[in-house]
Each structure stands twice: as structure tokens, then as C-alpha cells.
Image (cartoon, rainbow, N blue to C red; front, top):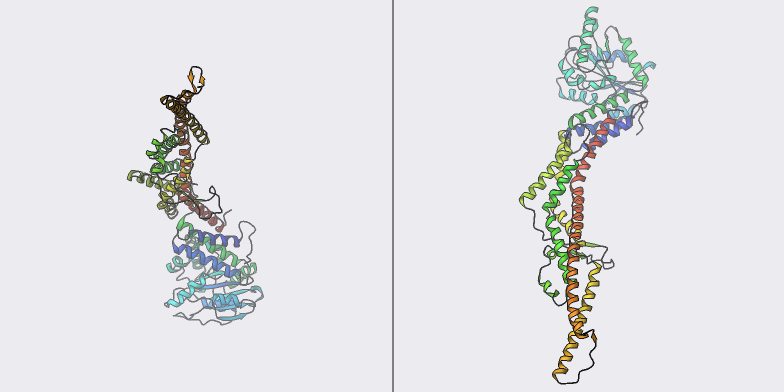
Length: 547
């Protein structure tokens, strides 16, 4: 679609595209009537721009008895339309064409079958339509007028001295077309029935009414189709409009601006505040952390670390007793929910999935209420200052995925807690040391047992090495037992310190995971809606040709 471009401001094709984008962005958020009307304008603009741009379609529209058909005949220079006195005679629109070559598809689009040729070089390219009466007693006539008033390039409203102030004309047509002054003429016909002073008063009063309709700059021409008074001026104005070849673009531009104004009135284009307040975002994360049992998980990580450290590094003589105590993380099903993906070619560290839920106690009623309040606060903060339709969608966006929050947070906790079960490398070294010490103690015990047996059997004693005054078997037995206990106590101290450090690290990781969940399920939908409104506002600005 190739459209002419203005010297300043966005081009018409840009404005049409912007209007269509605004309608698309407003769909489901703004009243359907406004969105449908905007789409219709955009489609109509595209269709008109694809037809003859060398022809200007001007329509004579008026009430019964205004002399519209007489004016049509006078402009055409021959009797093309039947003229009635007391009743409407024009039932369908007919066209007079000045140099109508190439205007066929345009008239087909307008659905005007009755066409006549006229000859006037000064108005070459003019397509003049004689419309039915807009106040006709027949509904089909009025509907035909309404249809063509939306499509033609130039509107020529024909009024007479008796009914120029008719409320039906001003309220139904002129006032709604307040932005179309550049493509409109008002012709006061039948001035031959008035004295000159009355003509001036009628024209002045008509200008006052037009100003009240929002059309202060619309030309008002006083003519008489019967006597020819003022007809030369009307022909000149029509010739200038046709020669400029801009009426079609001005009409489409006015239609786009009116549709954009309608969309703006329906949905508003107040700039969005940006995004939810940072404090409210923190409040949401804190509420989710409490509801997800993060404090309980952090405590379980510290206790679980100490529990597993004792099992891994404790004195082998007594460490087995620790296995009878429950693992705090296992009780919550944390660190135990990763399973290897069914694809065996993947190493165990690359692709895992989480199955089931953790056993972290569910959120209490108070905690759920706190989460709901935080979600509502985020929505209200983001919607502040927005027009009602957009504010409603932003608030809905903040809660649109609230049903997924609990499962998503629980999954995040299960995934993040996997790191809490990883064994530090020093556990293996201490475990090997403990077994070495235990082996030494066991060797000392066996050595002493052999010596005791030989003594009991009165067998000669072998040479007994000593460490100073103490025999080596005793050193091995007592030293091994003492070293094992000391290593176990030292390992417990290190495990306590490591548990606290791992708990803090896990707490930070859990809060970061919860922040990621809240970002994805709450803040992203809100930002998407705010971005949609911002793009809607920008599209309306372009459609209205605001630079």
C-alpha cells in the first residue's frame, strides 16, 4: 500500500499502521465497539489508498427539500437527477464524473451503480455524488447516507434557510465529524428566496452553529441552484479541491485521528508509571519466603549438615548410633528429589528433573493472606495512574498466575536445596583418618589380646617394644581411642561452623530462587501489560500525528 506522505509529521501509512497496532493492543482490554471501529477505519484507509488517487469523490448531502438534487444538476450542467417538491425522490446515490477514466473500481468500492459523464476541464477528476435525504422517512435511505458519509473524500452539506439549524443534522452528522473540517463544505442553498440582509444573517447564524459543532473553519457558501447565484464560487472551490488531489488523504487522516481519539477516550493513553515499587516487590518476596517455609528449610540445612558430618566423620565405634536419628533434610524431602533424566547418555550432573513435592509444611492461612496482600499491593502499585481498563488488566496480570506460585516456589526450594546435601571434600579425608586411627586402635587391642592369651597359657612372652615406659600395644589402643574421639570432636566443631555457613548460603540461594519465581510469575506479566499500554500510547500518538 503506497500512501502519500506529508512534509511534516508521520506519514499517513505510518498513522494507519499505528492505528491498527493500537486497536490490536487494545483488544480484550478496551470496549469492543471502539476496537472494531478503529480496525474498520484502518481497513477503509487501506482500501481507499489502493484505488484511484486522481479522483476526488464529493458527496452532496442534505435534508428533504434542501435543493440538493437541483444543485447536483446545476453543477453537472444537465438534468441528471429528478427534482421533487414535497417528497424525497433520490432513493440511491448516483454519480456525475468529470474525466472518469479509471474511476470504475473506486465507484465499485463505493457501490454506486448509477454513473453519468460530465464535461468540464476545470473539474477534471471530480466524482460528484447525489445522496438520498439524510432525514428521509425510509430507513434504507438514511442507512445509505450513513454508509457513504463514511467513505467519500469530500462532504458538501446542503442546507436551506428554513432548516439549516435542524438538530438532526448538527447532532447526528456535523458534531461527530468535528475533526473533519478540512474535507467539508456547507452550502446554504435557495438564498434567492431571501433578501440580501437576511442572507447575511442566515450565513452568520450558520457559522455560529458550526463553531458550536467544533467546525469554525468550514467554508460556508451562499448559493441558489435555481438562479445560479454563488454557483461560480462553489465551482471554483470544488475545482481547487479536486486539483489539489489531497482531499482523499485529508479525509483518511481525519478518520484516523477520530478513531484514535475514540480509542483514547475508551481506554486512555496516560503514560504508565513504569513498574511496581521496589519496596512492594521486596514485600512479595518476603511473603513468599515465609509461606514457603524458608526459615524452616535454612534451619534444617544447618542441622542436616551437622547430622551428615557426624555420620561421615564421627568415631567409627559410635557413629552408627547417629543413623538412628532422622536426617532433617530427608524428613522434608529436600535434596532427595532429583532424579536422573531417562536419557542415559547424559552425565548425572547435566540434566535432572524434580519429581513430587517437598514435605515442607504448607503455608498457614495467615501466610497465604500475606501473599495475597502482597500480590494485590504489587498490582495496585503498577496500576496507579492508569485508566480504568488498563488498571484492571494490570491488577489481573499481577494475580494471573498466582495458582502456580506455591508449586513453583516449592520446586525452586527443592532444586536449590540440592546444593545443601553435597559432601565437603574434607569429610572424606577425615573419614579415612578415622578409619586409620580405628585400625590402629584395633591393632593395639588385638596385640594386647594375643599377649593376654599367651600369658594365660603360660607361654613365653615375645619381646615387647615400648614407647618410653608404655608398651606399643597400649599406645595403639589408648592413643587410637583418644585420637578418634578428638578427631570426632574437632569434626563436630567444624561441622557446626560449616552448617551455619551453608545455611546462610542456602538462605541466600533460596531467596534468590523465590525472587526469580516472583519475577517470572508476577512481575513479568505486569511489565508485559505495562509495556503493552506504553506501546498503545505511542501508537495513538503516531495515529494522531503528534510529533
